[in-house]
Length: 403
Ligand code: ACO
Image 1 (tube, rainbow, N blue to C red):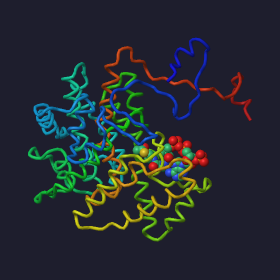
Image 2 (image 1 turned 90 degrees about the vertical axis):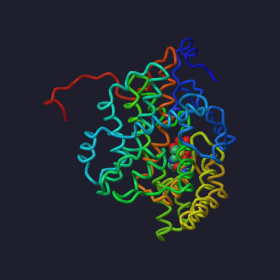
Image 3 (image 1 turned 180 degrees about the vertical axis):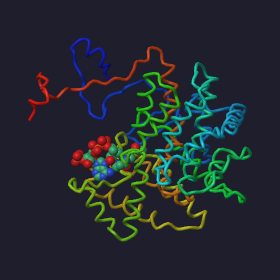
Image 4 (image 1 turned 30 degrees about the horizontal axis):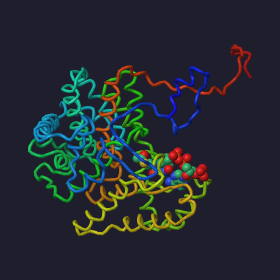
């Protein structure tokens, strides 16, 4: 890698790189990706090693603090998550102010930002103890906010967190329990959601994480930086792709278009259609997360004794695309969003919550990057340059002289 600062000092050079495809904006110890080989590691550990006993809370700790938690650390962090699950009662009024049709991602980003108002004591993050408290609060409360957003949009009463339940079962309880009938989470569902969340937990300088670092570089607080991350995640080229994939699969399932025709359209630039859940800025090979989620989807459906025609359609699209020269030449493979929706659908999570679930999964990564940046000596505010292409010097015209 070239240190562009040296070059600029010597030559006045400005690097033009739309989309920052070739620019490293930081040094980071958190996540390693080899896009050519399809390798992903969290703090050095291959992602595949989390498949057998998936545990999102453990991975959250690993990403933020750099090592796997020992038994004591794990128990204490789990207790912190349980203790922080409630929201200030006054926050409920904010949910009621949103229209029922409000997109849950809009509610999520607004309410995470609002945490800055309700828990200002968590702002003062100076050392590992403080970041642990703030991280536990945020990782726990995002789940309560997400569940309340879902209940609000469906006109359902809020279900309070249950202190006897751990992270994933408690979330499903807040989503799906009824006031007098508790949702019981099977081990199969628990494992599938733990795996899904942990596979989304970090992916180095993706659009939302780069946004969190960008906002944090101006020394904005952790909550606000993560709210910005939620906004960045929303779009269909990033986290919103999981919704777009499901819509694509449903369109095919409903007979509006065949898989072959869809792939043909995706190759036609004029159509503005893309094969959603395919392609990646960094992976030029299989995204290892997609392989694991495909396996998980199959296992989950088998253990639930269900079939989902959308899984067959996804498999069919994958097969067609992987044999098509267009996709082969451009090295376009299924990414993390291609199979995740099938898992969430099997759990009963509605499509408009998919990107919210992604945000819950990605939060530990955002926190880890915000904290890493905050600890880096000599951290600079993020401030890219531009190549100006506008008007030459010209004069201001009074209104009566304008055409
Ligand atoms: N379907 C059809 N063509 C595609 C697709 C696709 N899904 N993805 C890329 N291409 C084509 C582009 O049209 C372009 O073709 P060209 O060279 O003939 O102009 C070429 O492949 C390179 O694509 P870019 O858009 O330049 O690649 P970039 O790295 O900027 O984009 C992205 C990556 C945004 C993920 C893209 O592949 C895409 O839009 N995929 C679909 C959306 C999606 O699944 N997003 C989720 C990504 S993972 C995540 O963020 C969590």
